[in-house]
Each structure stands twice: as structure tokens, then as C-alpha cells.
Length: 207
Length: 140
Image 1 (cartoon, rainbow over the protein chains, first blue to last red):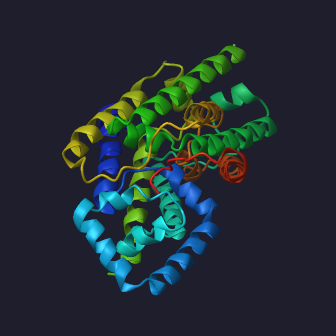
Image 2 (image 1 turned 90 degrees about the horizontal axis):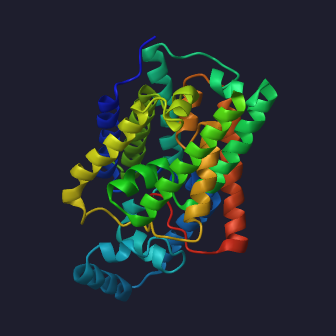
């Protein structure tokens, strides 16, 4: 079994993914956003249909207005409208059709992570079918059914928490902190210290 | 090439490389993660911090081109992050790690996957009904 990468190689690899993400798709890495898109796939489809009909109905005056806005304020002026559903969103996507990323693309993104993890496990000889998570995890939570229950509830907390916080390890931790965004710095400090606190508490119950 | 096809290829490639890198660092291994959180092994913490610093340096010249992703304070930032932190310590998974765990054969992570799905769905419903504040979402 191969050892894990030394810390510096991990840092270079992770930074490469984060930087590549920006150069390939023009935005920063963020996985919980992809989750939101996939879980809300119906909204995404409705929005896409709405966009299409709006684009078809749109008159020349609006086109001219949009072009003026773009010329005057640049594309970043439209980025700010990104999250507001309704009237603003279609304008933005109509201006740059490739900006709309269908939910299926996000699904491919997440499923590729599974493949990447599988390849890494194969290459390093770490692949093994297991019904529990790890020795320490089982030590903390006990029997198999307790482990599974913990995973289910932990998963709900992760899903709900990341959506509520507006980001996760990649979005807030990696991308947000690399851009020194205050909300991301606070979020990262909060989830790291919460995880550290609970890990110490769990460690104490084992002994 | 059609823009949508390009998106599939790019996102697929990014997911693949991210899954691979994260797995080789050891993030998918709960024991390694637990040792990081209890400070008995700081290797992965250094990897993460190093990646943040490196990305910061490389991305700095392009700051004007990077779309602002509406990451601002909102009522959910702190309680949401706390909930996520506790969930991470319990399940060893963040929204990407769960796939990497599954990829390395940890079948139990299916429950985490189901849990995250329920959590995201629950937040969607509750947010639409009760919270209604503006959430800056992650890389939409």
C-alpha cells in the first residue's frame, strides 16, 4: 500500500485543481453549489425553458440596451445579478448563453469525483469494499448500525449546513479564503473549529 | 465544439482530477481526517493551507476577471458552518469527499450520500418557506 502524498505535493495538486477550475470554466471551485443545482434540477429546467422563451420574445430595443450596458459597465455588472431569479437572470444568460450551466453538467462533475477517487484508490492499492468507514470511526460509534445512523445524520448536517452557510470546504475554504473574502474566512474558521471541537469530544468518549 | 459539450468535458476533467488529488492526500480516510482534527497529524492541514496560499498567489493577478460569487455575510453563515463542521467530524465527509469515499470502496458512505441529499433538499424547502434571506451560493 502506497503512503499518502507528502503535504507539499498535496498542496500543489489541490492548488492546481483550484486554479485550473478558474481557467477552464471561468469561476472558482465550489462543490456545494453543484449539489444545490442537482437537488434543484426541476427549477433549473424551468429556468432554462423560461430563458428560452424570454430570449425569443425579446425585442431589438432590449438587445441594444444590453449592448450599451455591457459597453458601459462591462460584463461584471451583469454578474452581480446572477443570483436574482426572474427578470435579471435571463438578461444575463441571454448575453452569454454559455454562462448557463445545466444541472447535468454539475452531476457529471460530482460523478467524476467518484471516478477520480476510484482511480486513486486503485493506483495506490487502497481500494477495499467496506461496510464501515474506518477503525477509529467504528471505535467512536460502535456497532455497524450505529455507524450507519451516524453517517446518515452527519450527512444531513453536512447537506443542510453547507447550503445554509453558502459554501463548503472548496467554496469557502479553498476558493473564498484564497480570495480573502471575509464571509469565507469566518465560515472556514467556524467549520474547522466546530469539527476540531467535536473531534476532541468524540476522542474523549472513546478513552 | 458545442459549448455544452465543452462544459461536460471540462467539469468532468475537473471532477476527476479533484477526486484523485483529494484521495491521494488522504481526505477520504476518516482516520487521517480525525487525526487532523485532533492535531495528532498536521500533514493534511498543511496541504490544505498550502493550497490556499498557492491559489491566492496564482489567482491574485486575475482578480478583476474572477466573478464575484456573492460570498457575503448572511444570517446562515455562522450557524450553517457550525452545523457543517459537526457533520464533517461525524461523517468524515464534505460534499465532495463523500464521492471519493465511495470511490475507494467505502459502501457505508452511501448513507452519507443519502443524508447530504436529504439535507440539501430540506434546506431548499425550509429556506423557501421560512428563512428567505439572500444566500450567496457556491459557484453557481
